[in-house]
Image (cartoon, rainbow, N blue to C red; front, side, top):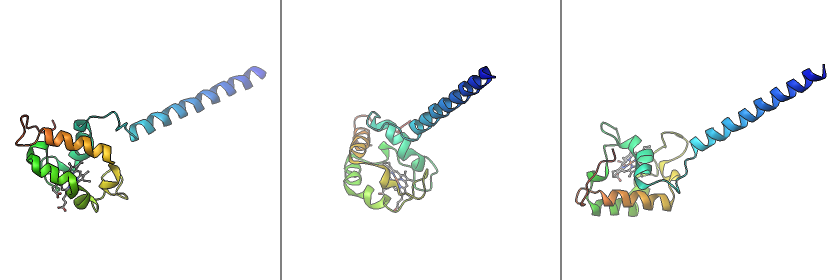
Length: 125
Ligand code: HEC
């Protein structure tokens, strides 16, 4: 009898631990570490979804615009034109709510470095 109780406790405990591990993994998937992510990866993850070929919002890759246009965009237009656009993943929030200064700085650099008039014009793959 005692053995049975012990066994149930062990089984229960391992279930709880597995559940916790899974929850942690899920949280990690939902919250990527943007500190460590490159501008390119952030563009792919956060901009491309709305701006690939045939998107309603228009197709935009770094080489869609020239340097000056990207600079203007990140210096003001983005905040202006995306403040009312609902986020795809979480439509209760707006696109701009998901970007902080550091992230935008990196994405801006990626776009500028690969703008249409740069030395290495690029789509983002
Ligand atoms: C949830 C969808 C969504 C996401 C995410 C998104 N955009 Fe947009 N974007 C739009 C829509 C919708 C418009 C059109 C806005 C308008 O016409 O007022 C737009 C417009 C633009 C334009 C055209 C110029 C302008 O200001 O209207 C550029 C360039 C652009 N987005 C780049 C980006 C970049 C770079 C990112 C990532 C940092 C991004 N977008 C993220 C939906 C999105």
